[in-house]
Image (cartoon, rainbow, N blue to C red; front, side, top):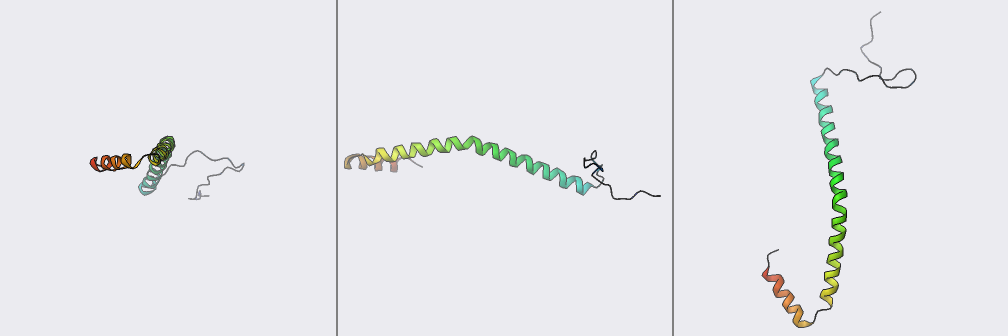
Length: 89
């Protein structure tokens, strides 16, 4: 009796078999691209985790600057505006 071309990936007890050799170049390419995308997404997640504390600190500094700006007198506000216009952003 000839073997079926369909390979079962599950053993009768539910465990997975060893990886089935993939012969199609297109299938290998799809799997390779999916793996690369997964690695890039993981890298992106790690970068976001590193950036979160920096964003929190930047927000705190902006709030502190805004509070200090509200305490300025009219003359100091004019000086601040001139200083902001003098520096490129």
